[in-house]
Length: 491
Ligand code: UDP
Image 1: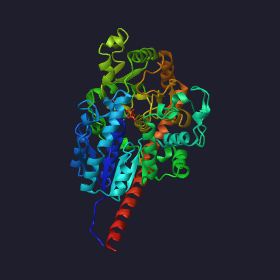
Image 2 (image 1 turned 60 degrees about the vertical axis):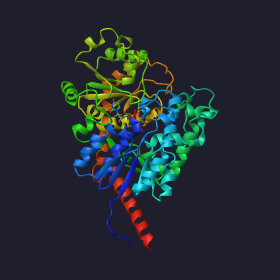
Image 3 (image 1 turned 60 degrees about the horizontal axis):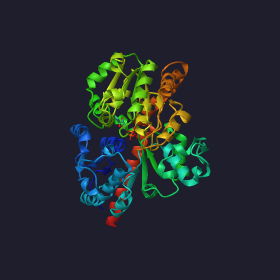
Image 4 (image 1 turned 45 degrees about the vertical axis):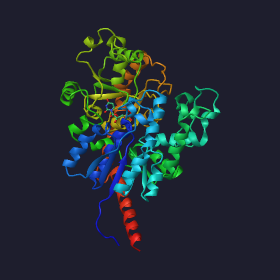
């Protein structure tokens, strides 16, 4: 028997999109803190987004490193330097991006053979990862990046196809088989689900589901207490082997980690904190719609008008793409807005240090697109939400926030849309939701519920907490698997 002591080596393969890469990097760092050798595979232009955090962890003695592979942008028909989904702005480009993803299978296989890890954690988008891990006889763990709730909703749609039995896009229907009575409309579903002819992404969605089912198990960035009925449903009804190991953002403990997470922030951490320090507790609304979507000027203008009318302090993140599309501020900002809002509102143009902001006691609300990371970061900070879902599984997350957890108020977004133009949400609806969330008795009740969840989230990650214990169980299982492999190799 090979009785030499060995260190568990896990290879992490994150998708090149901030909302997938950020939590998987946190995950790798978490594994390394628990004594695992963690290797993250990335590309030349993606690695700099997290290399400093990895370096800092290395200096603390954690065994974590990055391996770089080339990203075939030009070969896949993408512009030079396009290595991240945040630079994609059409379905055609998106398809080329996926082509590039399939082209890196071979170099990744080579790298895997070279380092022969004991386990591969791969994002859902690497549909070939389970097969590649099988060849090496190592377990592949699947990471989807969303809630159990959303995975259960998706399963209900695929299994029962309730959306095929309604007459219009606006008619509400119940999602069968779920622990709660959750309603949706066809208008809130992704294009690739509601089309009758096969959408180019339908094939990929099927491949993703297949690789999830065939994988060794699923890592979920959530904690059991947040969605107990859905975590049970996912395991028992859908039959998945799953470990809840989040909220992963909690692995960012110091100011540097929080301020530099995911990208270089467009505002200095001290400047940002100084601004927040001057505000009363729970008096600031933070507004950010994630890392991918650019609003048209008309929508930005409605937001500006609503912010001013609401009378609340705010930090509003406007993405670089939005600024590029509307260089002239007058296109999207009402005349004199910045002057009138001086001291009351702060606009961050580019990338915000989101976790640093949410964790500040002055922040009392978060207007969000309901991306799962943003949702969970708000829960972790005890911050209630104004929900404004746009695409992906964000409408599902909204239902979890408003109908199940009751820690948010919706602006009334109706339509799923990724690259096409969206129906505008009007100033009055935005303002109403903001005021309802920030002021009054109902706001206080919502805030109290959010605070309770915050405590649960933090406890889950402490030693003995549910997520801590789930990770312990997983690591023990992986070690046992490797040990028995070594033993059987000798006999
Ligand atoms: N984020 C950030 N600063 C920004 C925009 C986004 O730190 O200015 C982070 C945010 O904290 C979250 C991630 O980017 O971790 C976005 O993920 P999410 O799932 O919320 O949305 P997506 O961008 O995938 O739509």
